[in-house]
Every structure is written in structure tokens, then in C-alpha cells.
Length: 481
Image (tube, rainbow, N blue to C red):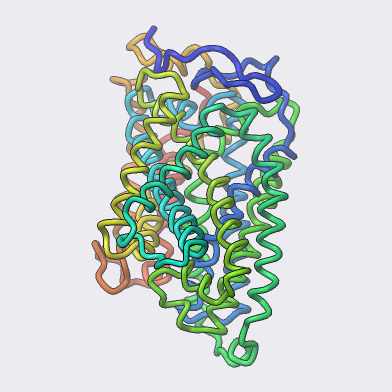
């Protein structure tokens, strides 16, 4: 029997090193409760990346009321999807992309797994770069020098290294440590965010906010899509990675609620704050670095807690992303202990952060383009996986770990043709309606991007409908395999 990892063992209670890789967690060791996941998702979404997302809404023409509505529908709605997908983790006790072998086949699952790993590495690069910028600003405030990364390459690399090291210390230790750190650190950095947010609200030009005209309804629809793609959709294929330790007695509705509320509360507050600040000061919406622009609104004594909160919030988000990326790397067949897979992943993001901070000319436009581009293949996976999950109640733990021809999930040449065909077709159709890249100079514009669906950012919705519909029509939901 061929497996995808040499890691064995169990997660330790009380915060010891988790030695388990991607193999399913035995039922006797699943004691998790939804309240734990609430704090995990809350912590992963208190990063300052919500502020530039909010500024983006104002840049698209929305007033504050419309921006708040888009924040609620986009973030809470997309994380409800994350919670729904996490039900599979409770059922099968394995990471999401490992469970995906049952849907796509041992070889057919390679495509979705590569996309998931690319997504995780991309988000980690975003987190690492932004956090290093925050730490660099903090250092230069104390030292009284220029905050330019390119003027201080040694300090910049040191800032990146500090963030990477802090990430590995938690993500490498595993599930039990991650859950504990996410919960308690949320109170610390959440309190800092409240203090800084209160100060920022006091600087808002309320007359300018009130005078903003509403945008057409289509712009609101598009904004919901941007928020969904930039928040929950990117986490959907990682959701089971945390829920695999949930007790089998946990209700499905509780998993959905824990994700929707846990992530929705901080996201709505931060995105709304970013929208409010940008509505009061339109230059924030077009700033090359909105995080730095917001920092410049603050006196030095308040900029310090702002940057500390920024660094901590991004660290909490990165803990979860790197943990998931390590599991995804193992699912690809890389034969390493889980903790070493984590180290490999952060080395990639370390290099990416160096590129964006010391070589590239811009950062946030590629960030928005990145989340929009990956929303299509990730949503296609969600569509197929969700339809399969509606009927499936059992995952064969032996077959999940067996990638040989004798595997129960080998299907035809290692590929489940219905699931793979539906996923591929949905991606093609989705990109027909998509515009990928910065709005000024798109990397790619689909032939149907000028339609109402394309102009309103609904390519990911069409992708989901096509993936789910085609897979169901091909008979993918008619039987439990």
C-alpha cells in the first residue's frame, strides 16, 4: 500500500508536538467542539488585510451603507460555505484535500491539491509581506529612520525572518498548540485592534462619508463577490483540516455557525472600518499601500500599537494557513514528517516576501488579482466536493491513504472521470466570465467578461453552479462510493 506521508502518531493533548500527518484521526481521539473552531476562525481573520479590502469597496464607488452590506454578505456567506465543507472533516477525520481523493481519485486529486497549495502559499506570502512591512515600520519608528524596505534590505530580511520563525514555532507544533494559541492571542490582539479602531474612527471625516452617493446595485453585487473571493472562498478547501478533530456528535449546523460567526464578526468590523476610513479620505482607496497610508493617519504613539496589532493579526492568520499548507504538501505525495513540510512551505513564502519587498514595484494590486484568479478553480472544487458530500456519509480510511492501483479510490487509472470532468469544465466556463489581473492592465480577460455576470464579478458563482450541476448530472451524487 502506497501512502503519502511517513508521519505517524497522534496529536498530543495539552500542546505537545503533533506527530500525525494526513492519516485519518481515530474516532476515539476526536474530542473537539465547535467553540474551539469559532476562536480559530476568529483569530485567522483579525488581520489588517480587512482594511484594504474595505478601501477597495469604496474605490469601486460604494457608499458606507453599501460597503457594510457587501462585507456582511461576502464574509459571513462565504465562511458559511467554509463551515459546510468542514462537515466532511468531522465525518472522515482527515484533511480536506486528503478526503478529496475519495471524490477525484488518487491521481485525479493532484490537480485540486496543487491549486490548494498554490492558494495557501499565495496567502502566506501576502501575510508574510504585509507583516514584515508592519514590523519594518515599527523598527523605523523606534529608530527614527525611513520606513522604505529597499533602503534597509538587511533589516527588511530580518523582519521577514522574525515573522517566519514565529509562524513555524506554532504551525510546526501542530493542532493542539494552534488551537490554544489562536484562542488566547485573539484576546490580546483583538483588544489592540479595538483600541486602534476606536482612534481611527475618531479621525473620520463624517461629512464626506454622509455625502457619498450610492453606487448602482450591480456594483454591490460585484463587491460581494470580491469580499467572498478575498475571505471565505480561499479557506474553503482547508476547512476540514481543523474540523478533523471534531467529535462525531457535533452537529453540522454548529460547524457552519462557528465558521460564519467566528470569521464574520472580525471581518465585518475590519472591512467596514476600512470602508469608513476610505470614504472619509478618498486617497486611502487609491493608495499603493493602504496599510501604510492608515499608519500615516496616526501619531507615533498610536502607530506603535497599530503596527503591533497588525503584526499579531497576520501571524494568527498565517499559523492556520501554514498548518494547512503542510498537510496539503503531504497529500501531494511528498514524503516528509508534517513539521518538515511546514518548514518547506515557509521557505517558499520567505523567498516570495523578499521579492515583493525588495524587488517588485507594487504589492496590493497583484494581491487583489491573485485572490480573484484562484477563486475560480477553488470554487469549482467546492461545487464538486459539496455535491459528493450531500450523499456520502463514510470515507474509507485505508483507501484514503492508499495511492496504489489497488486503492478503493483508484477508479479509472487513478481518476474519477465524472468529478474531474466537472471540475475542469467549470474552471473553463468560469474563466470565460473572469477578468484576471489589475483593472488597469488585466492579465487575462475572458470573452464573456463584458456580460452582466462578468462585469459584476460573478465568475466564481457560475463556476460553482457549473461544477455542482455537471457533477450531479453525470451521476456523481447518486451513489455512495
